[in-house]
Structure formats: C-alpha cells, structure tokens
Length: 347
Image (cartoon, rainbow, N blue to C red; front, side, top):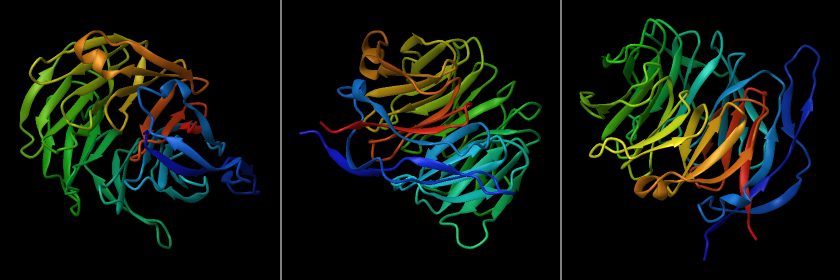
C-alpha cells in the first residue's frame, strides 16, 4: 500500500499596502486536507499544481524546505528571502539584508539556521525560527557573488561557491566568521555546491564545465569529472550518496559514480536546476523553456535515461526546484516571479 501524507494546501491572494511591498497571505483554502502521495516513478504522471505564491516582488532564484518540511524559503532578485508556512501558505517573514539578488539557500540539518548567498558576495546565517527583528551573521570572504551554499550533514560546516574572479569553494565553521579552508581548482565561476547525504563527499559544479569531487571532511580532491561542454549549473546526490547528477547549459544532464565516472548522458535542452525525489528513483530537471522533466534513474543507470514525464511549470526559466523532506511536494521557482508547489493527490 502506498504511503500517504495529509497536507493542508491553500491558495494565496495579493494584498497591496501603500508604501509597502506586496505581501502574499493565505486565502480561503481551495481544498482542505488534500491527501498527497509520495512522488514516485509510478505516479509522477499525475503530478499537478496544488499551490502558488505570487507576491509580485521580482524573480525568485532559489527555493528550499526546512528539514521538517514546515517552512518554504525562497530568495528573490530584490535581495529578500521569503518564508512561508508550507502547509497552509501563510507568509511568516521576509528577511532583508542582502544588497542585490539572493542566489542560494540552505537550512541546517536541525533547522535552527538558514544560510543564504547573494550578489553582494556575502554568506549570511539566519537564526530560525525568527524571533523579533530578523538579523544575520555575515560571512565575508568571497570577492564576487555567492551562487551556491550547503550545510554539511553533521551541521558543523557551511560550504559556499563563489563567482567571477573568485572561483573558489569556501568552508566556514558554523559558529565562526573566518574560513576553515579556501578550495581552489575551478578556473571559472563556481555555480553550485552539495554535500553527499552521508557527509563523505563534497561536490561542486562550475562554469568551466567541471564537476569536482572532494573528500567531505579533509576537503582534499578525490576526482574531477569531465564531460560537460559548458556551464554546470547544479549538482545533486542521490539519497544513498551513490550517484552524482550534474546539469549544464550544454543541454545535458549527466549521472556519475566514482568507479565508472560517467553512467549516462541525457539530452534535455538547457537545464539549470535538478533534484532527486525522496527514494532516488526520479531526477527532476528544470529548464529554460519553463518545463520540468522527470527521468527514471534506474534506466539512466543501467540503460539510457528515458523521459518519464514532463510538465510546464513556469513561463520561462525554472530557476530552482526542491522536493520536501517528506517526498510529497515539489517546489519550483521561476523568473516569472512565482513559486509553485506540486503534488500527487491521492486517488
């Protein structure tokens, strides 16, 4: 019997307050107590939009869920981070501080912190939940924009990816202001960074087309995976830490392991964001035409990646996407200024 989870989903309306930005608030529930199934290979063709956040405040670059799945955070082009209650759609807080766009977000494993990276070259660490006036601890070191951030699975370190003349990955102890390590190796902008779920590896993707794999604790190089012909926009691990996926503006998504180095190449069109579902059977990819494409990971490993299902999610680029920890929701953000939630209604 397929596992199900009851999630309360509401729609949002826009309230315009003179002198203040548009605020998304919860409207009357469209469908109370929707039962959502785990998003899997077997039911992804029934995926549909279950909620939308449209605060009309500019492009949303990144989205992420808190570890308990209760919060949805999204960073936008105005330098703000929006926090919604992911179960009822109510905006809880708007975190301001970055000067310029927010490009990357990540929650700590225990949910007590949210880290952000932005155009201003800073990494900011926000205490969660927000009590009183929001404030952040600012980590300075990158010369140029920060395009990727990630917490180590043990919560002790933050990894950040820097761009332009920087081209480094930096490792920050979670309670310190100075780097524990500055990692070189990319020859162009570092676009993304991710830890393996077991903490053994740290991977980065860059505009030089390289996927660099480092030891997750010593930060020593393990292997450099070559094959992409252009910018690697995103990297992700399967939940079992066995495979790495990388997406590129060269029109491919590649699935790798360290023994065979390259398992499959999927022709996708220009893709920026990727994520695996909770059981690792599906890889979701968001592309420049507003589409999300889902790939059967097992077929990609043993044969050739096969398009399992596609849907039109946004008007243009899908800037980011993320599955919730419970596996029942997929959040997407686009350059159309909308954040959307997708799920599979039970039935």
